[in-house]
Length: 297
Image (tube, rainbow, N blue to C red; front, side):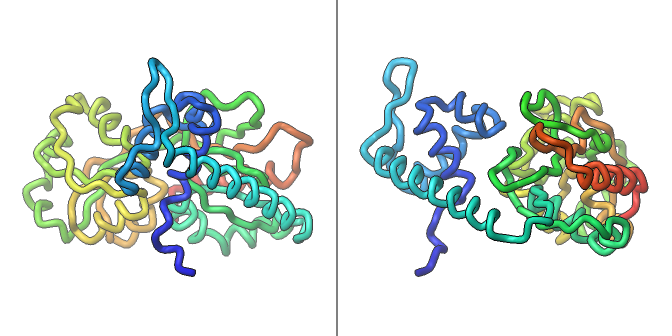
């Protein structure tokens, strides 16, 4: 049976948490995302269905009939998935370290370095779990995250390096000749490509360059950073991204960073549950830290 019409897993997880906890705020806390991020995911589901899943009752939320049906289905499905995953973990190889990270980090930073990683860490066998939610899911030993404090109290967090973000543009972008040699403020007149997974990136960059966020003009919105950068590389506009995730494109000339990169309050971190220390995590963290500091793809 085709699965093409299924909604995004992240949206279903946001709805299931809000329905189970009867609170969008508590769902955001459980998933380690903002209240607004959960609300947007639920609205996307409602728009796709063409009917509401929640109704307001005073200051709270009440499930509609459709919401009750979806809550029961998602609750059962996630329970079954968790049980199946744990069963597979117990029956699979026991010596692999399962590392979770976003698809963009996996595709743009981890995969280009897998050969070097294998050579440097021959005793660390990795399995990867691509996930967009910044949380430690069952079966995941550690997460490679771009994020910022506060962190959950039950996490062990190893700081790896500072995050730096900056505008990037393709040499093929038609508006580039008019931008060359201009200060960063010139970007206030451009239609800026942006992503739903990092809505604060452009406003944060604008604040650091004495620009009013309200003066920015946004173009196309993409669901993930990976798609955003592919659009930028195709010459569709100016995007913004962490330096480390575009280092290979910059080295090849596929993308340019005329205005450089600025440090944010975010950090590259390796996060794991607080439990008996795993010596592989220390070795992996040291290697990632060195790679991030090397400024090479």
